[in-house]
Length: 347
Image 1: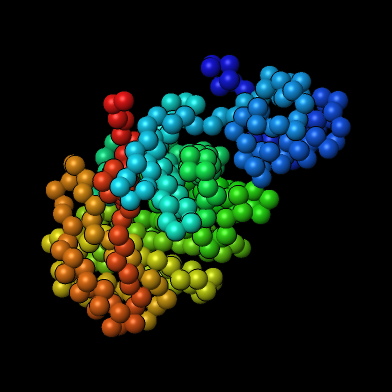
Image 2: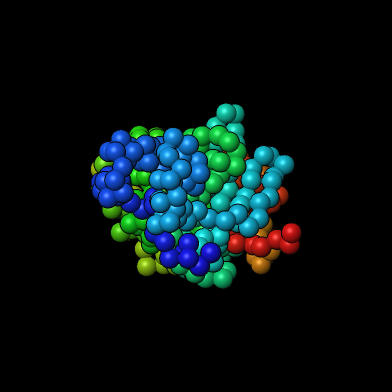
């Protein structure tokens, strides 16, 4: 096991490096194309899967390289068909990932960090702080793991698991491009959504990307004092500055951002809070996702009554703001928004 940790992951090689490797091993050039196809298009997880590659060449590759794929520690299956995985990487770091099937489609919720430093009051992920950021390969490996477990092609990915994607910006963008690559997993850019707490430099950089990736903002309150309490990690990115950055994003891209709004009883579902949200959204291109708060064991916060959530939805719609009430998937296995926290289960 230790030896395999020292070997380089063959999937980190470029096509040019693979071509050079094949030449060095005295193999015909077409072998490079075959190996690339297994790695990038077919998302192979071992050399044994490369059935059209001679056994001797596979053995030579295995002596030099490894597939550093994550190990599944636990898996839970929800009554709604969602599956939550605790995946462990080579250094022992673990993250949670969720697969959500729906009418011949398969969506995956990936983590971009192990833990999180944002410290949002309603989210289980941040209770133990941040362990480390993930590499692009580790983010993509979560998607591949879910795809293999379901035996289906993944049709959309949301970067809404553990961590703040824009604090791990380079790896997030690289992972998005690997997932979007037409010669790889070929997931449409508009079906790749990144959710941020409102890290403004990240939003500005995201707006400059040529691809049509989708942006979601964890808003949760349009009243500064309330948002500071709920989301202390983004206090410095004030609501007026956030609003300005989002409008610049809309002008630059022409794309509609989504606001995630977890409805919390007595905290952000009061009339002043509702008015502030309407003011924040009115006259702008946006979509509001109203999410009944998901229970987390260490939190005293409770979800708003459904009647209040429906009232806010109607009020937003009356002011021309698109709003939907989102039913969280996997709530019964702590796989819903704000519930991911690297929990090990007894086998």
